[in-house]
Image 1 (cartoon, rainbow, N blue to C red):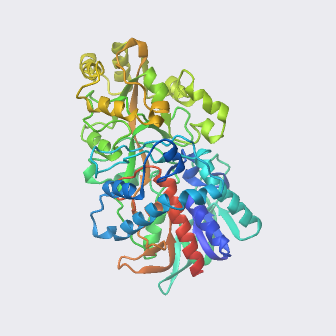
Image 2 (spheres, one colour):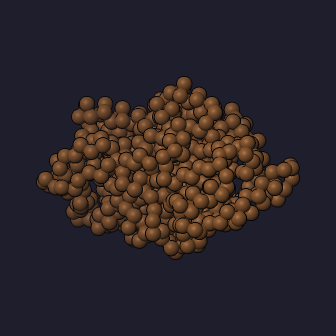
Length: 548
């Protein structure tokens, strides 16, 4: 087969690259090892959150944001400190300009709309120049992940109808072909057709071979989060020992195999030890893929205990500092921790990440969305509360601790020790003063109208029976993002170990660390997964089209 541009991977970054190249009049082939029902990749499962700066949605809520403040937050979080961070820094600057500039208008022009309340994710490590978002920037797409995908699927199908894009599913790339140092295409295996539902593991039975000759190849194959052995092998010493047990936040086909294949063609992988895994993972009671985990998007009120019942130190509160919390918990000797909360907190503050867990937002159902303000937790949260293996619900603290010992390590927790932690915290609720940093944050964050309306419960005593029942949630480590990857210049061209572009080879999305081989550095500010795919896919698609 022949094409001007060959895109490896039919996720969001690959789709964006493909439609941008096709818009430029190029003949495009898109290859993916999964069946057509997996078109769109991980973006389909996402909540659709996008990092945007100084938007009308922010301004309507009284949030004052700017490119300068976003840059301070981004670089304070990234903590770039390596010689190979040259291109990641350049990508970070370019992405910030995009997020504060044309990103919203570009998407809005394609029909993308946003939920009016802007979320405040990754609230930070407590330092003005350190990690975290100083203001709310997490814009949830109306339609969640599928809503982000929709305009690109629409554009891709129009190009397919016009024979400018060809989708070849069940085509697994095993080699990037080079000639005289330049990339000239790919070759690999055709896999047996599969009718498994989206997200389920498909077979790897081969039924033939294929080869594609192309003027440019764009690798957009995603990260490594579905390959737990690879995650453990890349686990950095600074985050402690790799967990023995984890839950998978992505399907098994997110396997990282294209990193090695690209390396064999001369590309360079950098920052492989930079990764983003969540500490608030729960086992899906109705799993799609094996070991399927869902992340709780928590408000800041739950009391966070390690497996032995010790409260996490400030500022390691729910929703504040993901990797700081992960690093602390890896030093406890256990692979899990606990949220302890009340019914009042779960009703106001618990949201589950993912399109399938938010049918109102995903389905653009205003009536169903309005039900969130009624008594009770959202339907998907209540379902986990009833059926989830990690949830314990009790009317007394003694019953709660008994249940926690049943779900966690038997006999590890004592009621007396947990009671001391909760009573000490509850004593800080009694007046407007106090020294408990978490309670102080709660009162401060409720000054933001978005938090007060839908994200932060009114401060109250955990042991107050008026807010019963008591709830405990076992939290597992959940694999998710790859922050490092193929090193690319600002045109998306893959670079060799000598810093020279590999002719004809481009990369976009998570496989490129969302740009440059790690534009987020050590920490993500959230809403950056989809945005990174959009930006790097657009850059690589346009540049590949110009070369081809």
